[in-house]
Length: 109
Length: 109
DNA sequence: GCGTTTTGCTACGGTAATTGTAGCAAAGAG
DNA sequence: CTCTTTGCTACAATTACCGTAGCAAAACGC
Image (cartoon, rainbow over all chains, first blue to last red; front, side, top):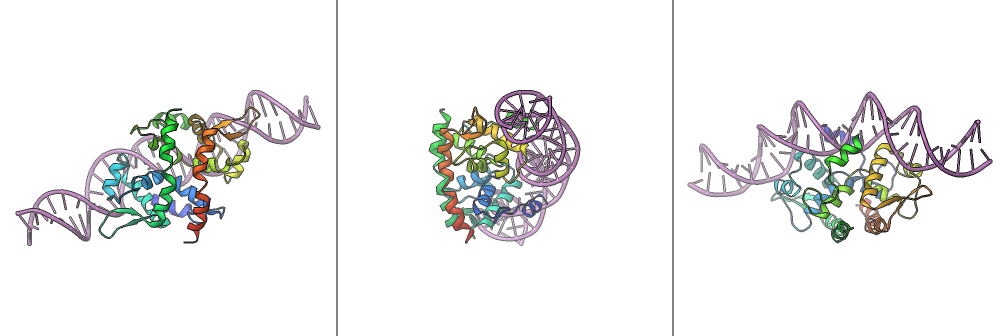
C-alpha cells in the first residue's frame, strides 16, 4: 500500500510544476534510485544480486524504486530474468558516471 | 531532533562501504538535495526565496538538507545572508546541468 | 516424476524521514 | 520604536523506509 500510495501522491512525469527536470530530479532524489542506476552501470543484475550490491537494502524499497525506474523507462526486466538498463537508462547513467571521479576528489577535501 | 538523529544514523562521508561515490549518491539521494543544487545553479537565494523556488517545500527538510549540503561543502551561507554554491558545489552542479536537456527528451518518450 | 535452489515479489510491524503550519529571535530599514 | 525580512525551530501528523520473513513460480539436478 505504501507503494501505491507513493505512486498516487507523487506524479513522476510532468510533476506539479510541469517542468520535466523537476520530475527527473524528484525521481532521482528518492532513496536508492541513483544507487540502482550506478550498480547496473555495466551489467544486468538479478534482484537478489542487486540487493547484495546495494548493501543489503530492504527489498521493499528496492522493488518500489525498481518499479519507478521501470515506469520511467530507465530499467527493464529481461525475459531471462535480471534487471538491466534500457538505452535511455544507459544514457542517463552516462551522466552519473562522472560523479565517481568527483567523489574521489571530494573525499580528500 | 530529526536532524540530529539523521546526522547520527547516516554517515555522509566515507559511508558504510568506505567508497566515496556511495556517500555522494547517498547524500544526493535525499529529498530536495538535487533540487536545491539545481535552484542555486546561477545565483544565491535567501532561505525564503529558495523555499518558493522549491514549490513551497517544508522549511524543516530544506533546513536539514541545507545543513547536509553545507557540511559536505557544496553550499555556503553568505555573510550578507542568502545561500549559494561553493566552488565545489558549482563543480558538482555542472554535472547535474546536462539532466535538463535529457529530461526534455525523456518527456517526449 | 520429486526435491532443491533461485527467481521476482510481497506482508507486516517498527523506525526514521518528510510534510505542513505556526512561530521564534536577531538584524536591517524606515 | 515599528515593521519587514532574515535564518531557523517546535510540534504533531503523515509518509517513506527498514528488516525479517516468507510466498508462488520458474529453473535446475537427479
